[in-house]
Length: 535
Image (cartoon, rainbow, N blue to C red; front, side, top):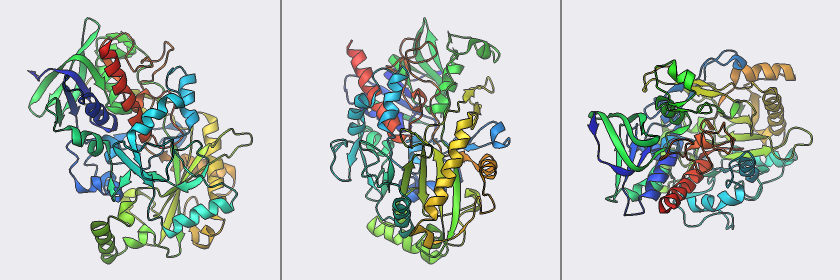
């Protein structure tokens, strides 16, 4: 094993959080920072074209290619869980919807034991992340690295969706990332000038010229070396073979919801008995590592439409492709400049609900499976899911080999209310589609189809069709209770010099897409690390 150069901070994972941490910590010229990323550089052109996310998913070139264990509540199906394996992580391959979630989500974090993580405490970091390109608001930032704003070039069907929501009795939401998020509106996207604004581009890119920052790609971290109760180094495999990267001050894990708990367990931090079964010497009995896994489960409802400018129509011929490409190349506009979802509705579906329980996303294309590609006829789809699921799963080791994938056990729909709310969300989606002007564009509901009519039939279809919307989190949660592996300053309890800062630290999943929350956690983590270093 070769000895890499020592640094003050070694960050494992160059994803959404790791790029923020590397950029912020290296702002101090008196410290040195090493960032280790398993994937390659983010140079592929489809990473930077917003609509390119679909091609990235299908290619698997920048993807860990995870898959869940068979899920009993989903008819024993395995679910593919794509996660980014490239600089920028999942933020380089996702659908670019930039939603913070409900302000109450973060108040719930604080109530759950993550003291100091209320919405009021997190708001300055949310603002520091962004340069908001929408209407002026005191709740938005104006000088942050991530430029974002409401969807431009809303499609005719997207506009009809928003109007149908209002016709069905749902309010218009002035700003999903404002004081309240109920109703329908165009989605904010981290797109500017027709290009994806990832943390790799916005944070890490400008920082890479600093002499105190070293970025290493193609590095597989295997474990954290712990000596006398302190994290001393990261051991793994680089392009030249086995290597060790020593941290004088801290090791910071930003490897994500799946890899961060796995790395801790291979380092001897986890349930002692389960680690010993794999021949791993326990360093710290922390049974909460890998637990509390949460994700948003969704069903996708495709519809055949009249011709109305859907992506299906644009991609039906080479001429359509050329027109799209030319518009993006010369004006940075058009369908290629839009992410996965143009607009959303956040709504309540049960009597007495205090806030929205479901999210319905509009997408301007339709398909049966991504592998089969878009339908040849005009089509749209609604992506329907619950905001705050009660089901909990786990990440567990499957092998003593640190490069083997772990067992992903999401336990979807294990909480009965999750199925009930999802069924109600499907029924609401149908009411939206039946309202004008969207109803005038719809020719047929393809899935689940009109034969799936009553609650029992819808529930059966949900079990057969539901899948992830790519928001796993919570597997190394922070909190003040003994079961939480991290304290509210994101330090591993019982091990000095070791922190985690990524989606795994969330006590509870936010109500919507989670990328802004990941960036917010990384911003706050960097500030905490600097504060603690000053004593």
